[in-house]
Amino acid sequence: MGAGKTSVGQALAKLLRWSFVDLDQEIELQQEATIREIFQRHGESRFREIETAALRAMLEQVSAPTVIALGGGTFIRPCNVDLLRSSGARVVFLETLIEEMLERCRTGPQSFDDNLRPLASDPDAFRELYAQRLPQYRRADLTVSTAGKTAEENARGVAVGLRLAAG
Image: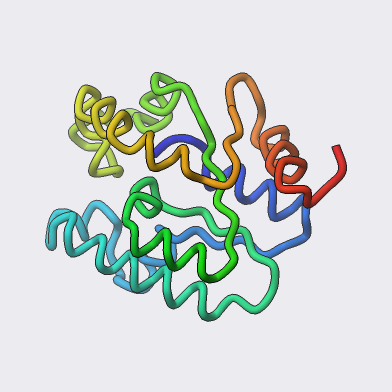
């Protein structure tokens, strides 16, 4: 959460002239509810089931080169990792300073309690969640450090790191 997956993903898609899809946005369209509302109504477990189904459908439907921005918890579930690997997707971890992610999750006048990102409502819990997820994130095909870089610079780093563009 707050690592810049959407902005870097959009910049990467533009750079490569590929399509771009944000998994969370697709889920919200399909469910006609925000991620926060889905969490509130059904809990995280049900959300993860919905997320896996949406990922599976998306991977089956993609027919052209596409950048997909995954939710922060998508790559944590082994079934999702298997779906991504079996589809030939290459996964990138955007390594971002935790305080920067917290600040991005806190955009606007919202307090942490009103945050649209349900797992970012408590800064200490956010830090703990990130520490728990970090070992799984490190299993991505490529890690790009985002510190001090624009979305476009990070997109270039991803493209070069995955050998999709010259440095």
